[in-house]
Length: 303
Length: 89
Image 1 (tube, chains in turn yellow, green):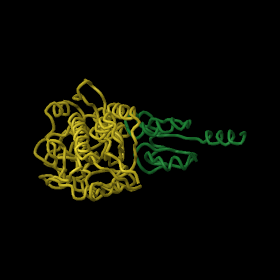
Image 2 (cartoon, helix red, strand yellow; image 1 turned 45 degrees about the horizontal axis):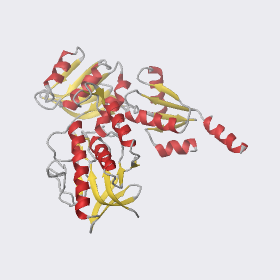
Image 3 (cartoon, one colour; image 1 turned 180 degrees about the horizontal axis):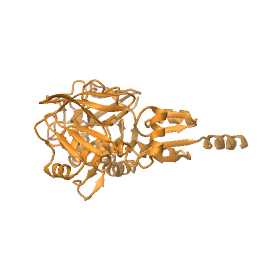
Image 4 (cartoon, helix red, strand yellow; image 1 turned 30 degrees about the horizontal axis):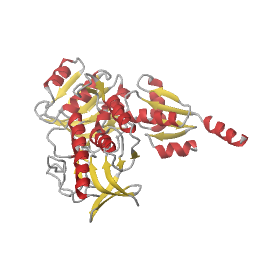
């Protein structure tokens, strides 16, 4: 089995940028990922990535991909890391399809959608319930839909759906929406959106497809007829494979200012880490830092 | 030589239809994959074609895109291996 200089797990903004830097440092490395673009690919409109006054998530993701592919990077797509282990100076990464070894690893596996955990969620997934407004939103043209959540991703989803659906109910379990003021104003200005605060979804119901959500609020339990349920209640880090890599109370991988984890040679970057602020541009910057740190580590160890 | 050409033609002749939306990243990747493999396909935009959206939901009992129909064999999502198998590539 060949021993790579570096394995990068994940190909979102952090993983791809790490890949570009590693390629330019002529490292012998491999990228293992489930998808390309990560959460950036699922984002709606992006207006805060320097150099682009306006770009959509899928467009930015494909620009990232194009940039990475220019270097002819060895890429294992649609492959999930299962176990990461270090023995001596060799780090092994087992996946659902194989096993690979390297002297250093960058974990850039990002985050995934948090689930509601209510009856009906699993049964109606892709049958009206979805975690991706960008992908599935257009299928709800002229329908009544609900967005669960009150933060930025919920408001982003709501703003996309306002243009498509007949009516959008935003079901928020706190006293008021927590997303950015500018987005809140846009939602409030739309004629076809209703915000339901202090409301908890207790079940998703329907026959073949979703027909309603059950909601509990201060006045008791009621049913809201909707054909779409967009779950946007936050994210959890993809760290199930990370073994002994130390994490914080939110499950995020702890890193120092050089992206080093508690295990020498294992670095991490982007939304999977405890870095302050989760932004595409920050993830990309962290990816470059992690690659340069890995390069320095390899040089220092004289591998 | 002649036989090889013939076989390739047969493979090309498989009817491939993809139900997609313009914004879904996996749809974009799936179409890219088909193009890279020189597969001729019909692209149906279910965000603008309500009838096609209903047809897709009926065929699959679900609303997720992409859905790829290869000679009646339905593949939900961008499953490269299944697509390869169905196309015989």
